[in-house]
Image (cartoon, rainbow, N blue to C red):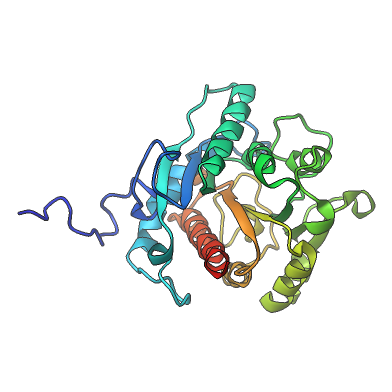
Length: 308
């Protein structure tokens, strides 16, 4: 009788409230943890199909498919033997108030970092990355960005609260160095002569091997602190239909996972997975892709942390 409520849960259906069934603690600052998972249920900066606000919940529910394995194949260690991970639930903010949201996310990020932890954010639309970078820059200064996406998100013709303008504002604010940043999977229009970022577009990425792509990433970011942001529409819609602005010709899941594993050893300081939109998903395939990518990013982060 004693283990009725405490037995380790390997079911794929029960207790899916937290990411990978990690402890759920609403006050992450005082918690004994190395990494905090924070949901950011926002889609008011979306330009296409809405629904990304439901992304964090969908990713958490899909993550139970990954929780049973322990040591994630093909890694040679169990992530949770090395680091303590908690789920802090979702950021709470006044609905429809972009200014309040931006302040709260930047402040929450900064408080988590000040407590000696790092953060994995689950979006939500891609605008969330800008206030997160503002919080990170207070602690790390100018960073390198490794950005997986179909779009550059460097467009100057949007508003301050727009999921297509974050990486126009971030360099102008001194948050990231375009020279040391790389965008992977791009397959929409941008002006290379005015762009500033290194780009491995989708056609190039599909022709290159994962090892060749990783080598380019490592050369570009050097030894700078690296923030990794993954827009799920980097994947081809065949592998991630549930997103607001799908673009054909993207990368497949296998290649993306191999690239992320190749990031082990670089100085990853933070990460997010964004733009999962459950209303347009089928059989939770996009949510599962988001959960898997998030887990692989945590492994890559832990591999570097353990080597320090």
